[in-house]
Amino acid sequence: MTSAPTRERSGASAPRRRRTSTGKPAQSQPATPTAPSSATFTDLGVPTSLSTVLATQGITSPFPIQTATLPDSMAGRDVLGRGKTGSGKTVAFALPLVTRLAEGLKSRPGRPRGLVLLPTRELASQVQATIAPLAKAAGLTTTTVYGGVSQRTQVAALNRGVDIVIACPGRLEDLIQQGHVHLDDVQITVLDEADHMADLGFLPGVKRLMDRTPAQGQRLLFSATLDRGVDALVTRYLRDPVTHSVDSDATTEPDMEHHVLTVTAADKPAVVRDLAAGQGRSVLFTRTKHGAKKLARTLTQSGIPAVDLHGNLAQNARERNMEAFRSGRVRVLVATDIAARGIHVDEVELVVHVDPPVEHKAYLHRSGRTARAGASGIVVTLQTRDQASEVAAMTRKAGISARPRPAAPGAPELLALTGPHAAYVAPQAPAPQSGPSKAPPTGSGNSRRRRGSRPGSRGR
Image 1 (tube, one colour):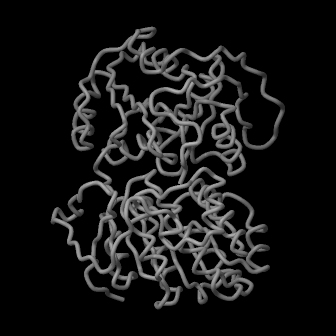
Image 2 (tube, rainbow, N blue to C red):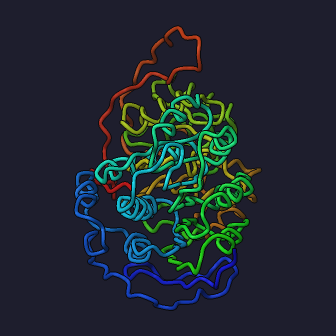
Image 3 (cartoon, rainbow, N blue to C red):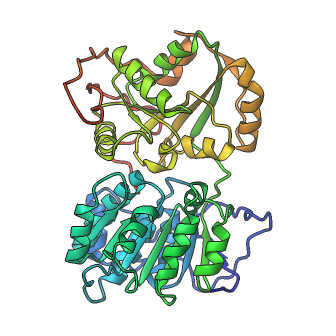
């Protein structure tokens, strides 16, 4: 299916218009009036029952991406929403998905009426956490479908009849081939983080799944960029879509401080410990799965409880570690790039690129773990002298101007970045186990909130 060129509109409270991925100025054609910046969810057509659910979660006023897209998506239009991570895209597609499906008949067994496709298990779990309370209030049911776990529970839910399926492409295709699910009844399809699905090589599977959904259904596509084949999805599957660009993937969060520290190979482990020792939440990125596991274990043994997140972990271990981090029982998460888009946790005060990324977009996605929902954050990149030229090129492409400066263990500059250190937590002996390694011991500690961190900040 081909479509006419997209019409692009910007919400009243959105930043200035950016250029498209082709470098040409985006077109603006106001087909319908956008809501004023002071609009409430009710003003945007959201039922009171769903607004009430959001209010209980501390979400009382729309973010720009929600203000911009809801009038069109609630009306049944195909929408392309562009905005960087943390901009509120999940709520932006969850509300029209639930509202419009609530008006129809219940789903038949194995035939959902709503489908959300996304790239990672972590993201699927978090999108489920956002959609499920809204769906329950509307009398709808949801389930997640992804690999790494037994399919038995997923098949049972599908056989009972579920309204909304939140799925990663690989496992969903497996279940289709086994005859457990059919997409003929899908009325609304959401493609979330389409550019990340392209990065991971999922687009062929996404196209096969989209081809199984009715051509007349509503499609909502959310992505930070339109390169790497995402534009082909828009052209093929969205009908006369309206594009809302609230932000660009190539810009950094205004309330984000960026620092580049030059360290020696001998000093680097101690500098990493100093940066991880603060009282607030921090995410540390390593290049390899082995590096993430080793660093989390080393930090825990040195009195800084940490958990790891990477592709070698079983799903139950991933969920256990993420829950420890999200609940605050552990303040430090050590991750590979799997978490750059796969986790959304508010009040992360510090991101450390222990191993600098090679690609500038990876830098931006990693850094986007902090300064979410209007809060501020600090991003630190550690480099050795032989990495300086690569880091300079990467930060330049990311639009970051941070002058490198030397750093040594115990330096006052490190304490200025982290604030006072948390209390030492004695490591505990691991319990005997036969399955995947259990989460490292957790520790308590009150987190001193730095500039911009707000209790109860709105998660999307």
